[in-house]
Amino acid sequence: MNENRQEIVEQLTEIAWILDHKEWRRLGEIFTEDAEGYGQQGLPAITANTIRYLGRCGPTQHLTGNYRVRVDGDRATSTSYIRAIHFSAPGRPVQHWDFVGIYDDRWLRTDAGWRITHRSCQPLGTLGDLVLPVEDGA
Image 1 (cartoon, rainbow, N blue to C red):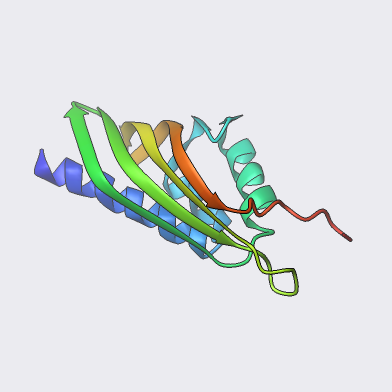
Image 2: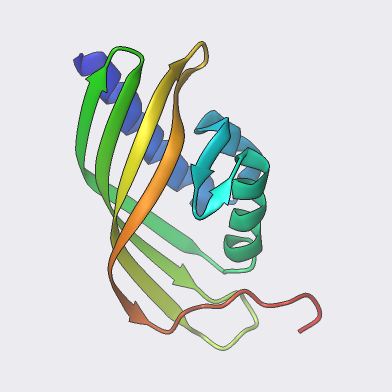
């Protein structure tokens, strides 16, 4: 059971890296093709929504912790804390927006490893100014 927990925690750490380094093509290493998350249905929609927002931010840092993982056969659930810091893109007025919340994830063990099938987030609070996506040409 500890091996399963460790694999899921590693995936939670990896998604933070993927988001912060804007490695969008790697989201399929974390989510199933039909996953729900970030208010979206399916990996293509999750990826497009992530690019729409984070792709237009400057540096970000997603810190996760306080992992609680429950495994039941080939299914699992996890809860983790998230603190995400978003800065404005270079050349824009300096802004930052800190978000604090709790991720609730449902997992499926696949041939490729553990993947998220459903992600929800409970916001706990924010600090700073929301760094809004900048429309092309704006």
